[in-house]
Each structure stands twice: as C-alpha cells, then as structure tokens.
Length: 135
Length: 138
Image (cartoon, rainbow over all chains, first blue to last red; front, side, top):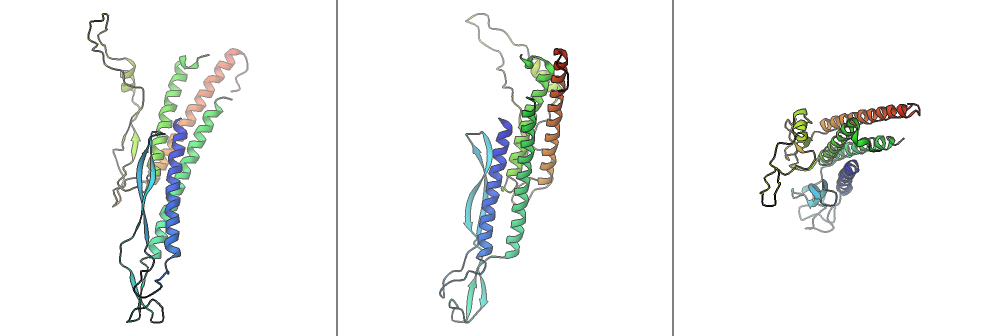
C-alpha cells in the first residue's frame, strides 16, 4: 500500500539522520583526543554522506548512508611542551574538529529528523482515516 | 455490494490513490532533504482534459481476423506520474533543492485533501444507509 511505503521512506530518512547524529557525537566527544606519542596522529574528524537508493522490494527511493569518510582537512597545532605527544619544539597536533561546525550540523540533523517524523505522523493520520471508513 | 460501480465512490477512491501517491513522493523528498544532488519531485496536477482523454480512448482499428495486424494502441497502465518540480525555491551548494518548509506545507495539504475525501466517502455511505433504512448517522 502506498501510505505504508511513505512510512518506510520517512523511517529510512530518520535512520540516516540518526547515524549522522551518532557520528557527530563521536566527533564532539573526541574533540580533545590527542596522540599518545610524538609524531602520532590525533583524532580525525569523520564525515557522513547520504545517498538516494532504490529499494527494489518496495519500489521506492530511500535514503542510505553512503559512506563515513575521514575529513581530510589539516590538523591544528598547539603549544603544550608538557604533553607526552609534544614534538621537539613543544607543539602537539590537535584534532580537526570545530565544535561550532558540529553544533550547526547537529541542528540540521535534528531539523531533518523532525520533518521526517511529521511525515510519518501525517501518513499515519491518513491511514487511520482510511481504516475509519469501515465504521 | 460493489461500491466501485457508483461513480462517486470510484472518483473518491481514485483521488485518494492520487493523494497517497503524492504523500509517497513528498516522503521521499523529505527523507532526501540532505542528500547531495537530490531534486525534489512532485505529482503532475490531475487535469480534467487528460482524464477525459484517458476515459475516451482514441479510436483504434479492431482485429476481426487472425491474419490482421494488430495496430491498436496499447493501453497505458492506470498509474499517476511524478515529475521533477518545476519551480524550485533554492539549491544548496551540494546541489540539493529540497526546502523542508515547502515540502511540509505540501504534506499537510495532502493530508487535508485526503481527510476531505474520506469525509465525503462517509457522507455518501450515510446516504446509502438512509436508503436502507438504518438511519443516516454515518
């Protein structure tokens, strides 16, 4: 049935946004994860990309997480001579996580999640109206 | 009793089919609100002329003999089409043109239309109940 398909589509969108939020929280949690020894890499930010995929079983286009890829932007540098990972000059490399970017990304994910939820709500109302015809 | 034979029920259930397919298309748009390069789709407006054309099929030669070549136009399946929306509000740098607000307005539009259809259906059914003498409370 068409309306239950739209429930599936919206659910796939919610799932994708949920995964995005998970990766975002990984980034935020690891914003201060530095290397263990000199020359080692600190935490590298992860990026989520979405993809529109045809679901042959249902015959509809759903969203899927295409890839969780590392962000290739350069690491930061900070002067911390006492840190075990500091190099000869006393600098440590810091993760390429910008908490402002993560926060705005989080807002966007939340907004999209809510929109999907609204679609589910609306489809559900339409379905129950149809069932009400039996009364 | 086959209610599909009464034209009102037929028309209402067709419109309900159209609306639920539109809901499907809109759900796809909302779900893909952050997919790079995704362009929102929308349903083609139901038009009286096109519907009439579909109802009155074009005249076609009949095959009355096994040796005749069948030149009749194959019938199109009775389904609704969805096209790429013509007017787009904005496109993000990733090529995504879904505006959530616009889509949600359409969703609520569809829901309201659907509700109208089901209410009409109920009213019509109530009229049958009156005719059957069971009281038309609906």
